Length: 163
Image (cartoon, rainbow, N blue to C red; front, side, top):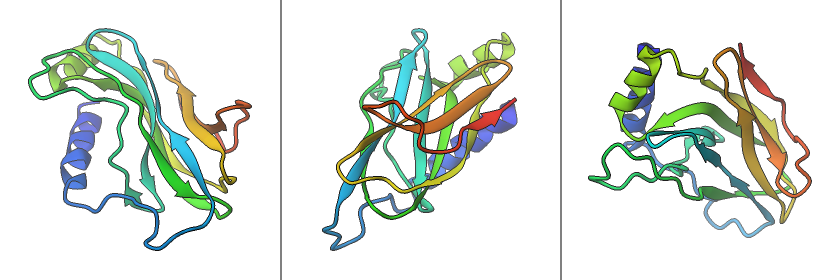
C-alpha cells in the first residue's frame, strides 16, 4: 500500500509537468460530458471514481478540492469534462479511497480500513449530448469501477475489478 501511495503521489507531481486533456483544437463536432463521482465517507476521506487520462492525455479534473491550508478535512466538488462524441475514446479510470492529507491515508492503511484501489483502461463511444459518469464500489476485499449513462444508469463499459 505504501508503494501505491508513493506511485499516486508521483503521478500527481508528474502530471503538473504534462499537458492536460482538452478537446482537439478546432473540434466543432458533437460532444458528451463525463463526470467523476465521489462520496464523503468521513471527515478526512472519500471514495472517488474518476477519469485520470483521456486518449493517453492526463486529465487534471478531480472530485477533491481541499483548499490550501484546509487542514485534514476533505472537500468534494463536481468534476467533469467534455469529450468528442460518436468516436471511440480510451479512458483510464480509477476508484478507491482519496484523502485530504497523506497522514490520513497512512493512518487508514495502518488501521486496516483502506479499501482496494482499482484502475485501468476502458474504451467506449460516447453518444452526442449524453452525460456519463464514472461509478463504482470500493471495498476491503474487492473494488470495481465503470462508466454509466447518467440518466438511465446503464453501464456502457466493462467493469474493472480488483480482488
